[in-house]
Image (cartoon, rainbow, N blue to C red; front, side, top):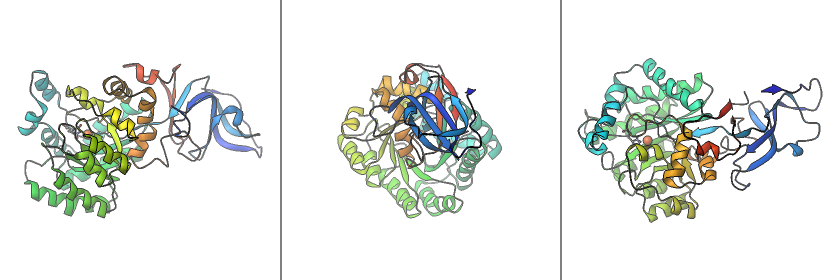
Length: 412
Ligand code: DI6
Ligand code: FE
């Protein structure tokens, strides 16, 4: 990027840094579509956006310590991957081969493979080993303009390992230029070494309180599915989470209609994720509650599912739709948020604007952080991505091309 000029020693300096001559996709809700501003400028100070709009509307006499020419490039909010399982031990390509040969995900899980095989590998890994492998995956996301990532636990299923996963996730956020939102997903599967009731008592009585005491979790998640936990069990966990002051989000209706969306809405979840089998009542409940629908096309693709989530009903009911990688070693070994966008458009029928909003504004809502991130608006964190594309649609259209020019996190 070319540094045009420096305006020094004047009273009119308002920005630490100013980017001009760009096309802004602000994703601000009051603007139509992606909120495009041609010949736009963005000024930041102390890591926050102070001005985002048309260059012609820059306040008279506005100056900056550093000014950059975007040369017409597209600028979007930093991307937000609001559903990942980035921290885990091992990998599951062997299980992938079994599925290619015809085995089914649920029967592999019931035979002690699936989630439980990753639990064994994760318990055996040190915090250092978990951090190294997760960092490699995190780097793939950052390379595509991600500035905020949610990371779940859920492959420990005991006190020590669940907390270790959360500590590793927190440390990644402290040590790298990215915001990490952590989610306790202890209700992911019943561990092989405990019965259901004893495990749920551990989650409710020990894990949630300890995660809260150590400030390790920003939210609590659960897997509501025939191979995991029933709605009644999830309700207990979520009530404990809410009494401890933590918001909840739910893996809902992925493989069957368990009433997961309605349950998430009733418990005022930030988001209900997957939703392939969600019924019309579930959609209506999400709309009433303002719960975000997080669509995860990587899992749909990898499991060769046939029933897409009810996107048209979600759209008509005004439910916010986010898109995420669901990066996990079993059902979605996907480390490209741009590919998730292509899959969401092609498989689920999202429009370009819905895709872009799904990894920015709506993903921020899914994390309860919409006041801080997700759009290019004054007051928000100066997290953005600069792209070498002619049109915003190119971010969704290419498969395997990464047009990121530069990622800016907190104005740097
Ligand atoms: N997210 C999950 O947590 C489960 N499916 C999904 O999309 C299970 C992931 C796994 O098999 O490890
Ligand atoms: Fe998931």
